[in-house]
Length: 174
Image (cartoon, rainbow, N blue to C red; front, side):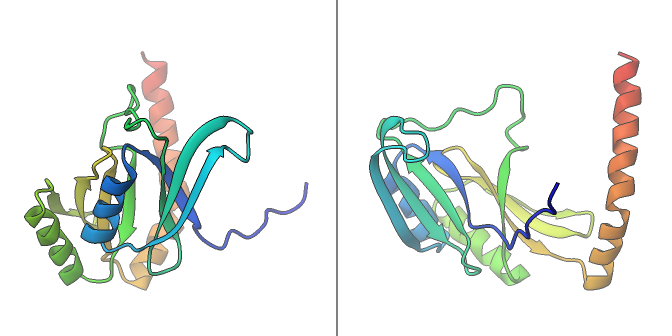
């Protein structure tokens, strides 16, 4: 088997949205992510499926995008029935605590319910909220220095293995 190719970063992550303009307003006007590209088609090129859509791309400062499909039916994606709403979310990195606080105030002033700031294990400091489509978002600031980040990385495989063993023991007793 050939070696894996190098993944250079995120190009985009895509979600369904209920309304393109409502989504544009939220991501561009409230969060400050410029709308940089729009694809409009009547069929899905990768599958050939007939489905009129518009695909919106909002760019972050590193060049990656968060993208949305409006399928023209004013329907938002339904949440997964077996997963709590807090699990599936999009975390977006900001550069300072002042930016976390500024974004929080801007969202609150726009009538968005915001949770936090919340500190996670000294790793990140975050606020949480939902977009108009019911997608949970997190604006987060890395709090750890390079040495702490390396320690987290060095411990990651052992922590995952310990969780898996504990989970398997728990499941075996049920």
